[in-house]
Image (cartoon, rainbow, N blue to C red):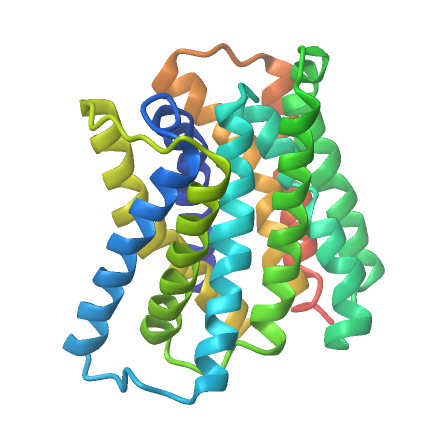
Length: 286
């Protein structure tokens, strides 16, 4: 069951990098994200009502979930979308964000008291090497410094959010937690939109299709799977799955967008896959 969900998460999360690039071609980044999470919040609210979950919970839990949403959706996705709007390629953005497992494993020990074994570190190293093999040729492109910094903000936010979610914000049913996360993110993104951009959305066919995919498949599907995997597993182990996102994104770009992929890229995907297998299996074998 967990393996199936992990596989589904990798595929769905990877698809977000392709659709994000399409979305920012027709909208400003923060307006698009604020719009997205208003709809996501409404969806999770209706789902929670259907499941007869208790909507009004302790204020402390609401604030913790909202902070999680600001980190995951506001700063992480906001950083990625903003970088894409400045012209950063999806592959470079994916490569920078793929450093998250390294940071999570470094901090998971002292903060969450999780033991990170030497086998896991071998898997982490292989995962990172494989990712660099797939995406390394893109590094020589002309890249905006602000776009790179924005991706680094996204990286730090994703790392912090994963640890936070495991340590503090794991006290609510998933639909309720996701509802308040979406509320927190939409409010945060709305104010960022008002302060930092000339907001606009052109409801083109590509925008509607890509936004629908991100709302239904990514926010309701992939993100819920991520929250579940963090809840039942360790933060370090779950974060290692992110090493497979950039290579799989590259494969998707080849399949859906006609971008070329070399034999060296395929070798990198294999190395990354082996690394993730070792890193995620290490705990189970101990």
